Length: 179
Image (tube, rainbow, N blue to C red):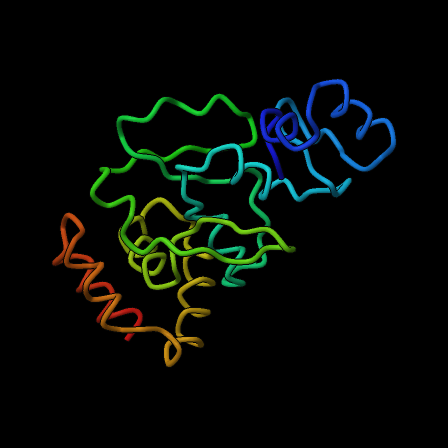
């Protein structure tokens, strides 16, 4: 994907950008976002549009195959001081800036790179916000985490949990429900 400015730089002028669009070599995905592919996944567009946001919660659980429940909105975390995202497709979560970079990784999604919290960070987030999920949804994800436990880095989970507020509660839930 490219911005309008990148397209103008590459093709020389707005006129040539429009010519590329008319010939079908370039596609306008949405205002200010262009691609050489006609169909771009919505998650890729949102990730490109909001590069400082990190995919988290329901969207991350779905992308990691920890649930088969397709989220209605893309949940993205931003630092607390960030401006609100005025996009009806995004559910924004504000977190302290010192925690925003913890556990961030990139995954390939249909040929596009998405910035997302890793599985270990998402396990910590799951137990931190346990009360915000329905019982069945929480149990489904916990059970799927138990299946992939040998592939998780338990040291990362411990380190992430130590950084979180109310870490005693997080460790208690991890001990009793996951490990």
